[in-house]
Every structure is written in structure tokens, then in C-alpha cells.
Length: 227
Image 1 (tube, rainbow, N blue to C red):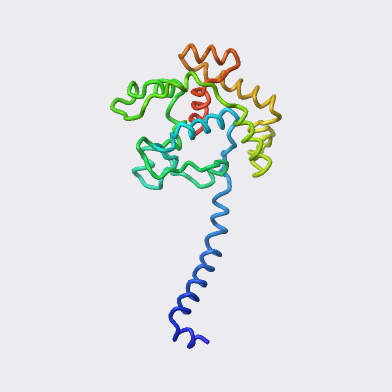
Image 2: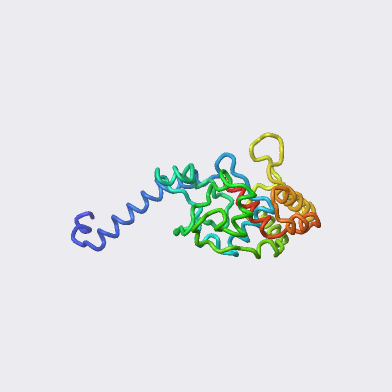
């Protein structure tokens, strides 16, 4: 049989490809599945953070900023620990990115503050001289769409078994509460109050005090969660 294959290079090449592909599947897929499980400490986004992530995508922040720290010294020295696949377990879609006009934001929550983000979004050059990033003043006026964020959270909980309303780390407490619509919106507004407390913009503070959430608040909540 093997002599027949040796006389027919095309079929021999196909046979080799099939064997190599099968061996690769057996070797790679189990480890890939293992590495893709949520890493310790990885939790689903809250409704406010999820709303901020939707704003991040809507305003194309991912076009200039990646969220993928590669395992090279130049990367880890600047941005911190390299990215692990399990850290993206609850990201839909992934925002890895392949181009950086600005720095990687995978762990920006570890070294930037709410106050810094507020100034940066209103006037980027005031905190990063020479930056090419445009200002985003509309974030301070436009209100956050919490309904869509809650809808996404509820969907991924049901369809993808994202562990909302569960004790993930085994400490006897619910890690990320979702609950019903009313309680979820109330929790998002309470989270917004904590963010706004560290901001200076009076219009934003007044809006949050009235139960509204400007987009800048949700976006900062999301950026603060990236660690």
C-alpha cells in the first residue's frame, strides 16, 4: 500500500497532511481549551462596565489601542504582565487589536486614575503633550445606554453561561451581581456615583446626582476594570 502512495506524490502529500493535521488537533485543542478557561480573578463585567465597553467600541477606541500585551520584555516592561488567553473569557468580541497608534490598554486600570481619564478625554494634550488623540467632549454630554448593556449581560448569562449572580472565587459572596432589570440599573447608578465622586466636572456630577449617567462615567468604569 505504501509503495502505491510513494508512486503518487499528490496522494502521498494528502496523506501526510491528514496525519499531521490529526496529530496537531490532538496536541493543541486540549491545551487550548485549558488555557482559555477564566484565569483566577477574572470576573464578568458589571452592567456599567459593559456599557462603557460598548462606548469604547462605538467610538472606535480599539482602532488605535490594542488590548494584548505580547510576551516580550519591551512589552512587559511598559505595560505589565503579558496577556493570558483566560483573561478574555468574558470578552465578546475580543479587542486584541493588531495596530497601536496609542499605547496598549490591557492593564490601564493599574496605573491610570479616574481623574486622569477625565482630563484625558476632555483634552488629551493636557496630560499627554504631543498626542494625536482627539478630544471626546461629547462623552460628557451624551447619556449612557444602560438598557442595551443590561440586555447584553442577560443574554451572555443565559446563552454562554457567564457566571453572573454566582460565587466565582468561593468566598461565599456573589462576585458580580446582575439580578433583574430594576436591581441591575440601580446597581449601575450606584457604581456611577462612586466614579463621579472622583471627577471634577460639575455637569457630570449633577447628572449622576439626578440618576443619569454620562458616557464618560461608564467609559471610565470600563477602563478602570482593565487590570
